[in-house]
Length: 219
Image (tube, rainbow, N blue to C red; front, side):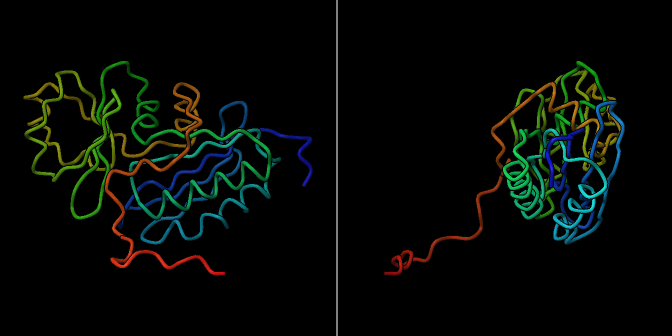
C-alpha cells in the first residue's frame, strides 16, 4: 500500500460495555466530515473490529494519524481496539493518540463547565470519570452520595441513574450525550492529546498467576 497520499484520521472506539456495547471505526476527513465508517452493536461486537477497520481503510486513502478511545469501558473492547490501533500506527508509520470516553463526550457538549461521565461497567456498576481526571466505579444507588459541585454536566451511557429530580436538587445538568461520535473523539484528541495510549482500566485483572508460580522458560 502506498503511503504517499494520506488524508484524514482513523478513529476507533470499542469502549462501550455489556449488552449495550457499540464499536465504531471511522475515517474523519480534514473538513471534519466522516468519509467512511463501520459500526457493530451488542455483546462480542469488538470481535470484528479488525475486519471493520480493513473495510474502512480499503475505502479511503491511508490516514495521517490514528485516534483510539482508551476507556474506561469494556475490558475486551479496549484491549482489541488499542492493540489494533498500535499495530496500524506502526504498520502505516503514523502518529497514534488516545483519549478517554469522558473527554470525548465533553467535546460533544463543548461546555467549559465541570463534567462527569458515567459509563456502564461490569457487575451492575458504573464507571465515573471526572473532568479533573479522577476515575472510579460504584454501584448505581451510590449516586446520591456523590458530592459533585453545582453546575456539573453529566454525560455517558449510564447517566440515567441520575434522576431529573436529583439533578435539579444538586444543580447538575444531564447532557443527554450517551456516546461521542467520531468527530467529537477527534476534537477531544486535538484538545487533550495523549501519546500514552494504554487501556484505562479501573478494575484489576481477574486472571492471576498460578500459586506455584509461572512455568520456567523452554530450553
